[in-house]
Image (cartoon, rainbow, N blue to C red; front, side, top):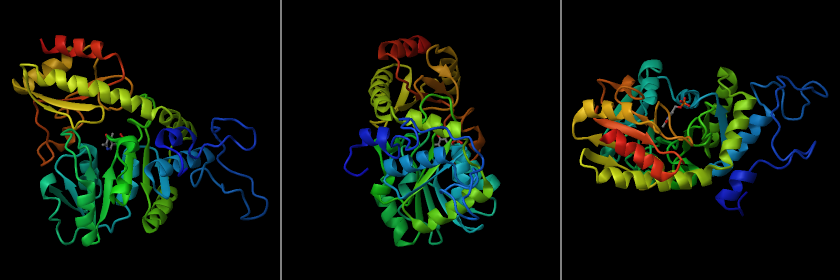
Length: 356
Ligand SMILES: *Cc1c(COP(=O)(O)O)cnc(C)c1O
């Protein structure tokens, strides 16, 4: 939908009224199989693992929003990442920065055990090992919330024929479109901001690389980690308000970051200046972090992020526990906030009492 702005595409891309009924919401197609007029003659769908009309709508919407030519929806962010990793040779070389989602690192090192995984400091991504097949970045990173210069990394990676993958879960295509910056593949946990309401687990891969897309299409069908039609509908429903939600997440997160920066018990605030995630460390270390995490009432103590309600978590013991002892281990004095869309005064009052 090239002539339209992003906010318009969120609502209309890939979602023309249903030609059969005029329904303005894409129907949830539950059929597992589709009638054929003659052997091999069908309307684009044969069997629902291979292709489903509701999933096809989500995929074309996501391709449009990220500016890619192909998108593939999966049952979770991890299933999406797993399919992508399977496009590499078994003993391929992959570079991942030391600040990344713990589950990604676990997938690379404990499931795809033949992979050569090089964990690098963000600042050294411009000197990639010669054999690198794929560079995997998150921006902003999780939970350090550092911002990566995707265009620069892509330039260096492409000079040695490595693919650049960006996990765009934190920024969403509303704030950052990695393919426009030179990345080859974008991956999402749609469980987070895309769904936006803590009620669906999903993943998507988007690319403009035809060779990668061909492999992903094969893997999506051959391994079968596909999302249910209802889950696809929930992500599509969430997407419509992505821009509205992100604006409020961002406004609230900036105010929370400013409040924390002035608080005497807070050592450091990590906020990249956009998005809804804020991390901070406490001067009194892990004990203080655990105390604050246990005292908030509006900020629910829970894993995950990106939904309308505010959440607090302790990455070292929760989301990033699988990285303990590795180079991806997280400072135990650090807390991560997913700032929701509630009234800012209530959010700050909750943090103030929890820090008392
Ligand atoms: C949650 C998350 C994932 C994993 O996605 P699931 O939907 O939980 O499988 C991957 N990357 C990032 C940045 C995440 O936040």
